[in-house]
Image (cartoon, rainbow, N blue to C red; front, side, top):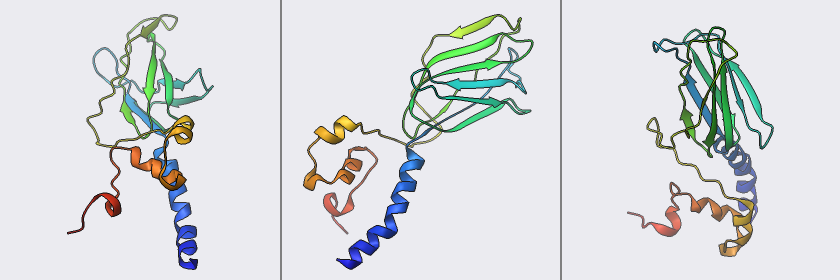
Length: 170
């Protein structure tokens, strides 16, 4: 019994750290001009109207931006640079442990002109094979759990393997 408690106390911080790492999403990309050249020093703003979340990033010399550790949800991406029309894309859905790439293309024009893209961002990510699942509080309450252990909800993810219960040792 003491050994079990000792082991749990050692592993608990690891579980909290791992949960924090996978409970967020990531959005990256490169801001391009009409000739497919990178646009440096563009102001990229990611915001969620539902949660009030807003982050701003200025692209580097290669026109790249990175928004790491974003809470899952629906977002709007806005890109502004002097000499170009403002680019706005709404309904960007980021899920748990999702890493998406979005490369906005700015059009030459006055800064007062806004180009709004109404298409949804693609959900297929060919850069990695990571899979994440978000378990809602309603599911945690209503799903039948063996021995009422909430850690069994981890088994709902398609990438989780419980070797002790479901696989034979060779």
